[in-house]
Length: 156
Image (cartoon, rainbow, N blue to C red; front, side, top):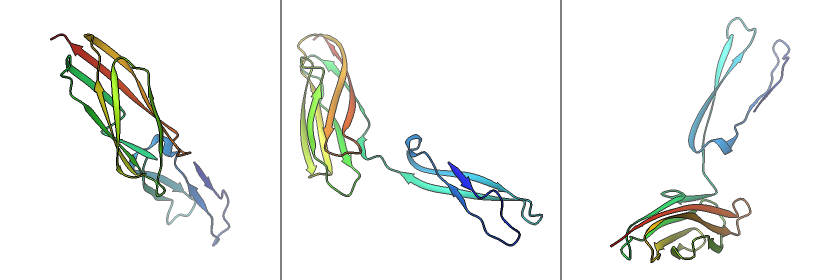
């Protein structure tokens, strides 16, 4: 988004406003805008917009869990849920669509700010499965976190 005064009188001042859609950015960013004018001494000037976009809640290492192994020996996968706000959040529910394939445990590391979600395959059948785990929070900016869960259980 860019807004600017289209006409500036000689010797006057004007205003340029640059904005960025942060929904399409993550981590650090740098954007450049060129301002063209009819000033013969400075026909163009480069403006830089730098910043960092942090998600409301980070999932480390990411929003995907892969459970693979031999039946009854599948390793437990862990995911860290990090609240990037100054006010604490509460996890109000964890729901999933894999009742016969997984079980989960939630550990609060730093109350309101850091949690560890452990997911374990409990399926007694060999084969693959796929589904979602939804973490619900009381944070109005991010009331739900969707985590993809894929698994493959081999025969003994």
